[in-house]
Length: 414
Image (cartoon, rainbow, N blue to C red; front, side, top):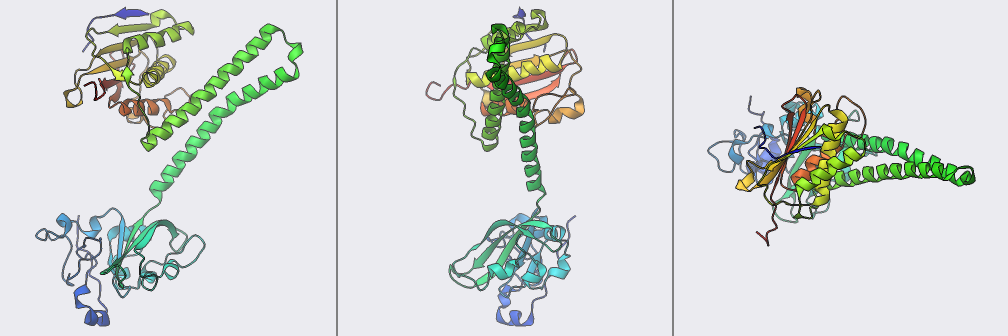
């Protein structure tokens, strides 16, 4: 290992109006609305909006700064007190494949013929206009459109008084694509973990069964070799489980950081020594420590996790000399001091088109192997410390990972 102390090289259109049933117009002239009626505070048409009104009049302070129903990313369907549709925005048309002009004026159960997963008619089941007077709506759930297409539906019942009659039913529609992507991601995670666990568990089971069944047939050296293999595979399983726990905490925002003073230069030296002890040539590593490093308060276990993943990535996927540089951070959020660590190699590097995906789940380079979760966890751990991490091309063509950690001094010591 070489150590240096020199400085580092530096088309909007208006929605069609609903046709108000004559009897409804006679009984409640103030409720006459349009397909794009001005929304009230509850998301439905504003009371008092006339048939000629359009949403988003810039001069009306109640029009949500010009936001029209068709501007909403989710489907919006509003039915009046008679149960007829008065608003059916563009997203609702896209999700249901029903033109807005056809839906306007129809009873809600005909415009949105929804069924639950057991095939029951949804509006007959929930009965928004004739059910309990204390109900305020329906939580989001998976329902079916004609043809079996799934859609996420939530509804709100708007009343003038807490137990009064329903004046409007406001329905929100969402497609299931985002949820399906999440489900596919979870399924892929389970499949990856199952695959990675199967190999070491098979090894552990095989060696332990052999030792238990034929203990007397092996000499001490053979037994030791088998037990060392079992120990290594058990360690691999332990690391994989730790990765899963970290992913769970990162995704839920519950990753805890237990800060204490950390000598990051010493931590880098320890990780380099691990690789040289494991058979790598000391000449493959060049460590540059820039004088004047600020104090660093961080979680030492998490710092080891970051350094371990980045050095393992450089050794396994890179070539030539692996350079690790530790320097005072040039810029930090809010002007706070920090420490910057750069790990680079001299290999082929990461293709430009792949750099935006490096820190995502299951990303792997050209060489297969591993779970593809390491860099995703590294990014989550760095950000949990309030830091940032980037990837680019190193000065000699290889991959270069650079992360910055703020000093992180606890408030009671600041």
